[in-house]
Image 1 (cartoon, rainbow, N blue to C red):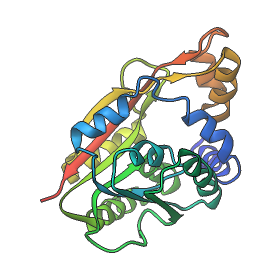
Image 2: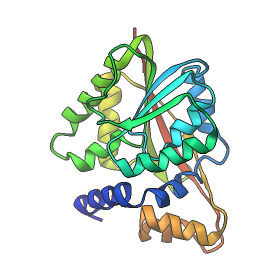
Image 3: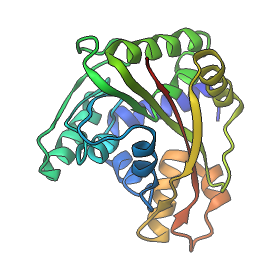
Image 4: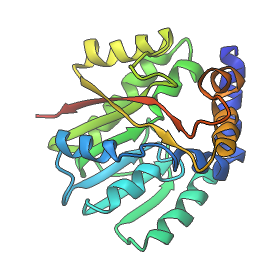
Length: 238
């Protein structure tokens, strides 16, 4: 699939198919590895959080059970509509969702203990192929702006679906190397495997988001668990 087709596919999903997307992400991380890893990097209890690119509220839901408050933003209204419904269903009240661009968060400087994004920043490689370095630098600078002294920035992105060991594409590897080498972010990876309700659901949702090639590679008509590797990058500000 060409870069242009992938860019248009993802933008269409985020704009017009938010509920189907949320069905997919709700099936990931069957063992709860992500919460444990985040809490090791930066204890979540009592933290004030600004979330970039919140999407349908996957991370918002995960973090809300521990943090003092979370202000979560996304550029797509349809994603936030889905997130609003999901967050109301949790019964939690320590959250706020609003429109916001990753490079210009509508919050005050030095207001957060934790600035976090999940599966959002890496889209710069497809959406801004000639200016991805400047775009990612601006988003990391915005994370630093909203953090208090001693705060932590955390980035969560894919390291590959369908494989048991991390393997990023060439484009993503360039981005991740930039984060590590130019911005000094630390890195670790975890498994966040999908567990689907049935082989039929696995086939439907994998093809919906990842396409036929990956689905044909990792599904056999019986499988409900699909391995996923996820990278976590972080930096503690002084």
